[in-house]
Image (tube, rainbow, N blue to C red; front, side):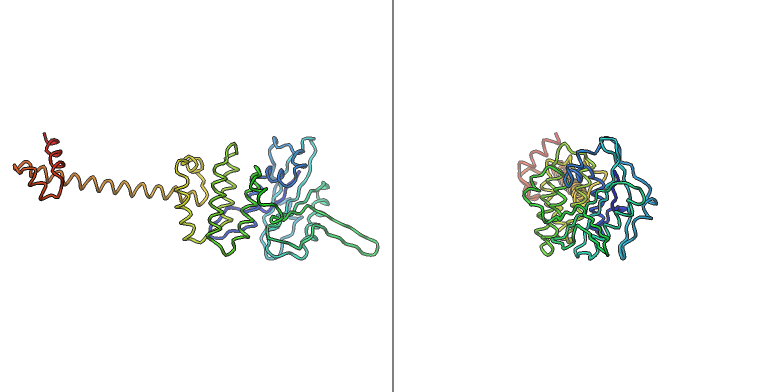
Length: 324
């Protein structure tokens, strides 16, 4: 089985590419992805065998670059439980505007791969915009020659939000993040609330692979991007919310997504500030003790020292006892 997707080099805060985020997540959570969208096919895949990534050069001659879009295609080879090989072309469509010839392009991908490798292909297209007019079928007829090509098509907004919340599949959280992104184009405070709730739900997941949880945390964090001021407030809110669960920060401390990394940094800064404050307070108290000790040694009584130092008489008596 072969999976094709557009894979980003890295996550970047300065410029978030939604298309790349989705491709990266599908690669990281491929088993969950297949289980969510094509459970019948998932049941036939042998995930105990490692996915084999083929060289990019093998695919360059098949997939042409789309005008105005940089594509980094890769092919991953997996195996079926039957021992046979099957290919999957996964094309996740993230465009907000429909592409007029999308179905035709999917057909072109199909016949080029089929011609080059002679394998059967399962094609999946995922649209994250609110609605789409793009069809999941390409039809061509010309003087008695006719062909119809149909592929799997999913639109994120078609999924029921409540059902996604109940789903144990990690991909459901990504779909919720996409729904929230579309819903909060001009409502950043609401987006922050959604983001906080989703992050908490994901970092609280148990019995999940650490790398998969980290991948989903990154996806949510980068997809639901916020203005700086609101993002800083989110960090403060998460810091308060995560109290008692600091192991989450240390579990992923080697590669924390931005929000949790900022929480860890905030805790570190506050610890330093508190240490400095305590040091100053201890230094002042030590200085006061030294002055009062000098007055006691001159023979001054406790009441007079208390009057000039503005300290309780009991405090002066305690210092006198310490000197003894």
